[in-house]
Structures are given as structure tokens and as C-alpha cells.
Image (cartoon, rainbow, N blue to C red; front, side):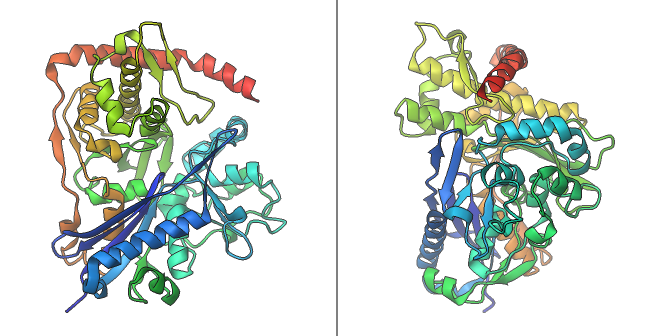
Length: 495
């Protein structure tokens, strides 16, 4: 019998997951996840150890193999996805430099990114589709390892999260356009590595040789090594395919492009995106990604400021999880009795988080409501910016961990003033990776790929509160705009 099980591996900002699907039916036959412990360091640092990544990868794959039992012999292919940017730097021994990776939410290079944006931002946006930001691999490298890290041999290769997993599994180094372009390292015009970005990085001797070749998603990059196979209990030699950045993998899992849908991702990052035609002059959005298509681009508004805020408050208030924060929030009305929250707990571009209008009568419930309101309102604000750039966002699907809570999705729908679709399956990234594995085996061409798509449902806004939500939206946008001078002053003081 032809093997028909596909495995997708997703390395997110807080956990690592593996999902096994039947190619013919799309039925999930095994799922495993393991938290990735990140160390929060002074100055906004956020790192995870190589040993923790290795342990998580081995655990989830071994667990999947255990769940499959004898059916592990039916695994036909696998692929990986993961969060973008951050720093996965290999030394001369092909080990992570310092034994650690740096998360994309790391803010230690914030001042460097702002200075680089001031000097090179316009030219970089024209060439690679984004301006410098703290979580970019080259910006982090220059800040933490020094401008001569490549020249002195401390840094040999730069990888992305999914590609580091692929390297562990196969020993091969490669990447795809979506990750490289999201990191601001690919020319929009050519689809190849950008010399403009290399020159602007300030890293001496940085070049294409420090990265793997850019391959199309769904291309086999190598086979599962015997050593890795023995660790996780899967057969050696399983083809491992090139994936894509987790956003694109998730969009693939719901056929966002084919169905003409934008997405809002309630994850650690606030991500709002849509695939559209090449537009000139370029729309004024946060990021334009060349993901390997000649006539299409991925357009994004994003910042490290979605569920991270709610997770932070859960920790501060000693609540068990994000759902408990939403439970508390929903005990008070929209607007939190006049309390507002600026939802940039992970910073970025000089912005910071904080409560505005806090008074002695405000309670824990008001604080929770202010944070929840702000997270949903920021997604609506960024979606509106995409629309202002001439992009179609009238139909959208909500993804990410926050999408599992219908109350959050309904709140966003109210701020948008229209129904939205939600995919409550938090494994869309891993599902998308499994789809890339399917592509590598020609299963999508055989019409079997559609069975792997994630189910979605429509969430309607509460029409009775339309005016109140519109008013809140306007007030929130005015608050964020008026806070710009404060952010500038605080950022200047931080230097």
C-alpha cells in the first residue's frame, strides 16, 4: 500500500508542534506539542536554548510516532514551518552560536533598527519591501555579535526557524523566499538575495554564501537522517520538503489566496495580511513579501503586539491562561470604564505599552478588558491600513491561538463592522507544512490536497453595539496617533 501519512512540524513563538494527517481524508491521526521555554533578559532580550529546541523536536516527533504505532511506516513525507526572523546563527561547527537562538520579539536591537531606518529605511523599503526592525536577523547579529562576526568566523550561516529544524532533520541547509523576504533580505524585483540589504546591515563580508539556497515550497530538500530517525522512532529516509514561514503556511492551510481572503493572526505577533497583485507605486504598509510568485505579493501590517499582551497580563495577575484573562475582561463593558491600554508589550520601533487613564476605581477586570479591547482594536487598525493601501480585505479569516476564543473573534468582527471567518484549529501552521509535504509528493496535483484544508466557521458581530464599537475604534486610533510624541521621547531617553 502506498504510504499516505504526512507530517507537518511548526516551531512557533511559544511551542513546537507536530501534526500527522492522512493524505486522502485529511484526518488528523496524531498530534503533539511541547512548550519552548524562552529566557527573558534585561534590555528586552528573548532567547531559547539549542538543547530546548532539540528536546522539543525529538519529543513531538517521537510522540507522533508512538501515536501512529505500526502506521509510522506509512509516513510518506514531512515539512517544517516556523515563526519568521529572529536569529538562528550557526558557527563553524554548525552549532547555534552561543548555544542559543534569539526570538523575533527580542528588542535589544531597537535603537540600532531605528537608526538604520532613519539612514536607509526608504532605500530598503524600495528594494526589499520593509524597513529595519529589531527582530531582523542581520540587525540582531550586528547588535549582539558585532559587525565583524562574519569576518572573524564566529558566524558562518544564518538560518530561519523552520530551516534550522530542517537542518537538524536532514543535515541540509536551504530556505524559501517567504522567510528570506519577510526578514528583509530579498529583492522584490528579482526574488534573489538583496545586495542593498547586505550592504546596509553593516556586517562585514555578509553575502549569499551565509544563507542556504532559496527553494520553492514543496521541494524536497533532503531525507530524514538515520540518527534522527532513531531518536524519534520514524523510518529513516522519509523525504523532508521545504516549507514556508508560518503565516504563509497557515494561509495555505485555509486556501486564503484561492478563496480571496485576508487573514488576521491572533498570535504572539499581531499579523494582518493579504495576498494581492504587484502594486506600483508600492502601498505604504509595514511589509511587502516576495514569496516566489512573479505577479503576486504578500502584504502585511504587523507588530509583536497581539496575544503577547494578554499572556503578559495573565502572568501579572496570576491567572492560568489567556482564556482566564478574557473571562475576567468580559465581566465589564466595552471601554473598561474609561481605562485604555497601549498594546505594545514587546515594543518595536520605539513604541511601548501602558495603561492610560488609570484611576483608583479601576479593578483587575477593567485592566483585563482594556488589554483585550486594545488587542482586537489593533488588529482592526492594521487591517484598515491594508485597505487604505488599495488591498482587498473585505473578507477575512482569523487564525492563531486567539482564534480559539470566539469572544475575541466576535470583538474583532465588531470593530471591523462585518462578519469574519475563524479557524479555531490552532494547528494551521503544521497543517500548512503537511500540505507542502503533500506538494513534494505530487498529491496536490492529484486533487488530494484539498482534503487537508482546515475547517472554518463564520462569526457575526453584535449589530446592537455597532455604534459603540465604531466610537471605540476612532478613540483608540486617536490615542495611538497622539502617543507618537510620547513614544519618541521615551525611546530617546532609553538610548
